[in-house]
Image: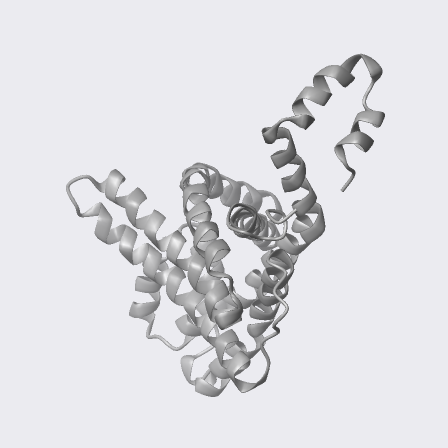
Length: 276
C-alpha cells in the first residue's frame, strides 16, 4: 500500500493541501491502514471463493437432509427456511425422483466430507487476515472442519427457528433484531474458534464477532427487501441458473461482511494493521 507521501504525489497539485490535512489526520491514517489491509488480504477474491464454496457446500447439505426426511417434514423444512416460490420449487425439483432410501447415511457422509472445502477456505482466510502462523493439521483439524460445516447448517436452521420464536414475543421487531444480532455475533466468533482452536487471537476474535453482528443488522434489513424480489426476477428471466447466481451473489455479500469484520477486529484489537 503506498505511503501518504506517495499518494500526495499522485494527487493534483491544487488538491494537495487539503489531501495532506486529510491523510495526515488520525482518521486519514486509519482509512489508509484499512485500505492496505483489504488489499493485503485480497478481500474481494477471498469473498468470492467463500461464496462459491458455501453455495456448493451448504445447499447440498440442506438438500441431502431434506432427502432423508419424509415429505411432511420436507415441507416443514422448507417452511423453516422460509423458502418461497422459485426457491421451494428448486428444492422440490432436486428431490423429485430421488427416494430417501437412495440417499442414506453413507451419501450424507460423502456430502459432509466434500463440504469441508468451505472450512479449508475459511482457515486460509482467517490465517491471512490475522497472520496466524499455526496451521491446524491432522485428525483433529479434520474434525474441526466437519464441525464447522455442521455448525453452519445448524445456524441456517436455528436462526430461522429463533426468528420464529421472536415473532411470538410482545415486540417482535425489537426481539427479532436482538436475536439476530446475538446469533450473528455467536457465529462470527464460533467459526474461527472452531477452525483455528487456540491459534485464534482472542481480541480480534471477539471484536470481529461484534463488528459482524452490527454489520448484519443493516445487511439483513436490506436483504429482506432485495433478495425475494431478486430471486423472483432472476428466475423469471433465466430460470434455475438465474436463481443460483442470485444466491451466490447474496452469499458473496455475507462472505465479504464476514471477512471485513475480521479485518476490523484485527485493526481494533491488535492485528497486523494495528501494530504498524
